[in-house]
Length: 473
Image (tube, rainbow, N blue to C red; front, side, top):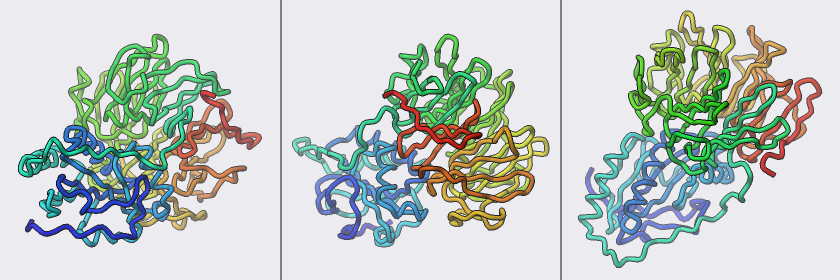
């Protein structure tokens, strides 16, 4: 692109975790101005890569974030600040409610990064989450070209509006047995084994974001989410590590089943070693005694993993972002996040299209039950063609009735979809929810990971009593 002076940032931007920032205030350093969205896993991948680059060049590189709301809920600064804290973003972020900065810089998609040199000139705009290597190369070249002085003082960033420390941090995965509750304590990078009353029995993971196998206290996860129990084994969708992990509940040992620690395209076939196959942001996981089904949010696909022979098999999703039904090889998904297996049907909540999808596994065909498109969302009950959700992330089957429970994340509510052609309704609860991110049914209750409130709730299906569990208190 032809070089041009970067336009100054609009003074009406809502800076969330810092004082107001400017392009001019970064002169002398290379500036990466990242345009991102809170609900986009592509953005999460890119921001993770930028954090690694920033750690490599703490003096020569400055990073500023411009958030662009997609959903109505993301216009609210508090919602975006939740995402900033959940992703541990360590650079100033502004909410561009009207997409003004987006227009000034001529951005056409998120995530995008405008690279601005020390003189305030835009040198390149790079789009896509898979551009981290290119970004790192270009940033290194620009820093070398500018001859950034090592005598410059490093910008010390002290975030404002950080979450208060809590025993749980954005819990986003649950599994339950007749006697135990398992919780993915996502932003504490660990998995907990608890009683139904909330007493912690064991911790898996040392609390540091890393990819390590071994005993419970030495192993490490990175933003784990989906959980699935198969006999004496707990399978974990280790989202930040782009890996499928396994916890032996008898010994407490943690092992990597699939994944290399970096995002990649899965492939079909048998993997003798975990490093032989890549995953891309596994988010939700469910299964039976011999198979697991994985919602791969980062590549918009559904995959099957056969436990007996360690074989991966493609189920549905071309990889392109969108919504389209039909044979699995032609279907489109958009950040599938929650999955529920009901006999030979796999139900999926597709977060970016605010939809509920059904995959008939024998015919391998996809059907949309609720939802219309990438920019069609809302908060409406009624018949399926009229019902609307807003960024749902979890789904679970009620064992006592033909009902699917749905965590309607951005509407902060619990929804019900009746199977057999029934409609959508909202469950009345004694309190509102704060970005619920995971559901599990067992022991006569629906268990809710209310991620934005850093809480686990137990909803008794018979008495309709809602109780908060005092986990870690």
